[in-house]
Length: 606
Image 1: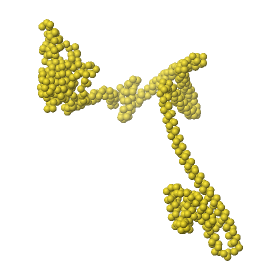
Image 2: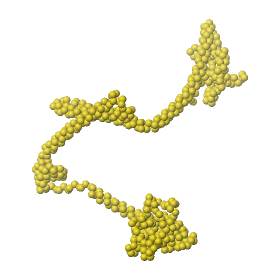
Image 3: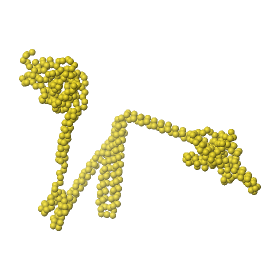
Image 4: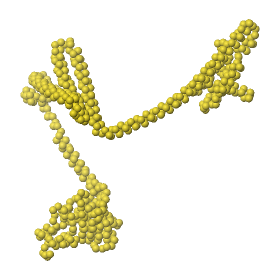
């Protein structure tokens, strides 16, 4: 190797990890990342003094590379320390969310023997440092002059720092660089945001002022000279709107008087002269509109003719001679296309018929101008016809929309047939489950109704037995009454005490039979409600020693429970013959059936 070859010397020194001669430091990143196209051997080949791209003030180091570009970190040599890169296989060090306007970084994992001068020597390569706050616990905060310098400092996170060539633990440590939240940074960021907001407001105001329509020109005061100029403007068609505005303002201001009346009359006359011009312009525009209508009508007729031809093509395709040669999918598409073409043809034909109806209505209105008596009914009929036509058009459009939606649904069903089948099966399962639940509920209701029906049948049988029993008793009583009346007729009123005994008459034999039947029918109490009713009825009949009829007893119980019936009370009394007995009192029409409380008598007999 030649001693004078500078390129060879530079290559050898780079291989040994030594700083080339004349360099004050080493690059933090590779040449391709730090400065694009920068050749470190350029100085030795050309004789130019070498420069370090990381020197303060040079600003040659760009923003840190993105994650897409693989970065190979190298050893960084400084005067007082050496930085060893982390393992490239390890994940990148984590950082917190960047605060707004961040210029301060937190540096942890410093060696115990690291001083502020060493820290400044390492991090001043990232940019101008304004302040360093070092703690006794091996960390510090560094504030840079600009925000982009923080990104360069974050690049050093994960490096292992070693002071000199010492192997002591106090002289080494792994750096952890992260964003720090400082009040000064946030204050400067707020000031900057407020300045940007002021600039944005100013820009918007300037934009609004530029886009604001110009103010109307100021209207001059009336004078003879201005009136003469205004009269000339009124004659000009292009300046007529502006001139009428000025004339209207003068009249509203009250400039018209006896002295100026003639001038204002002449200006009003000039304004009236433009009426004929405006009517001629209107007629011209109406003529152009009629021509446009005719053009549209002709074009619509041509479109309708083409639609008729398309529909004829589809109809010919659906005939059996050609239809049999198409596949199933092709037939379906042809059928859908044919329906859609027919709908469009019908819509265009309805539109064309509407135009013709409007023309006929206009002609009828023109004819009716000569006969004013028939004008109002025709106008009403035309209005009704227009409403009916509008409703018909709306109905047709809704029908076409519905058909289009149906076609879309059919296509979607074809595309997603399997998915639709699964959804349909799920809906059917849900419906079956719902029907099963409703069927079970109906079965339960039927069972309840059947039980109620059986109870009602039992009550009806009991009522029938009671009815037959009462009829037999009435027959017996009628026979006894006949005998008693005959005896009374024979005695002619001499045996009054016997008559009184007959008026209050009991039927012991019948009661004995009834007691036997009631004992057969007697059943234990079914519920607590029946026990409560028996207690109330017993108390009520106990305070009525001569008994009470069923209507009186039912009216009293109705006050306590409005749902109870007289039949239920009577059936309950008949089920307990040892507690309640029934007696008949009175003669003829005054015959009455009463219930008495006889529980104490039953206890004495037992």
